[in-house]
Image (cartoon, rainbow, N blue to C red):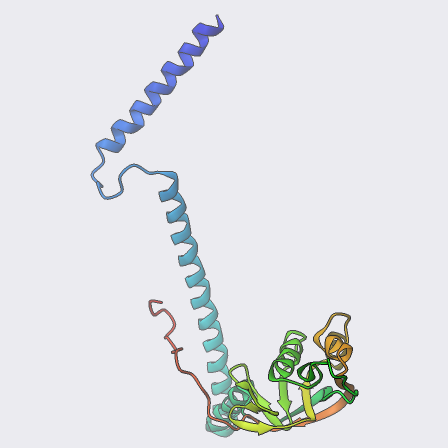
Length: 242
């Protein structure tokens, strides 16, 4: 009985499969072929990409609508949108790191080790290198620093920090110890990050490098002075094919 029932199910499955194959073969859309799992996954991905693009366009429309509202308000108040555009331009320069800014944060002072070295000690382990400064800067960025300067020079994500013998070069400018790194952001979060166990500052202190960290209620920082270096990236218009 069970065997007969099993054969019945197999026959029914074969009939259904033959029905769908017949429809597929008679289809007038030969380019699609048989719908396979990989094709379904690819179609699902295409739909997802289109939905993301639609959401991005909606977001752009909303942002442009808000900006248009600001322009209209400025026009009604002063008869011109110049002040509104000037304020927007200032914000863009601020986000790019080109404006002079102020805010709370921390100040880190790095200096070479003052320990007396033995004949077998490696002197390079007791002086500050470009990688040391770069690692501290990266930790500050990861902790939420909004603006960073080294010896008064503003540094951006594209800044070059390189070794120059007994000094370091930042965007082509020479800097010697002590290195004073200022960071604007949440003072507690920044301090906790750089003083955490196993942080790079903790490692430098272990090797004898002199490190000082202090919180500051107000740090004034100049804008970025060197030329912006954008060699490979280019902007694309919204909706333009990537």
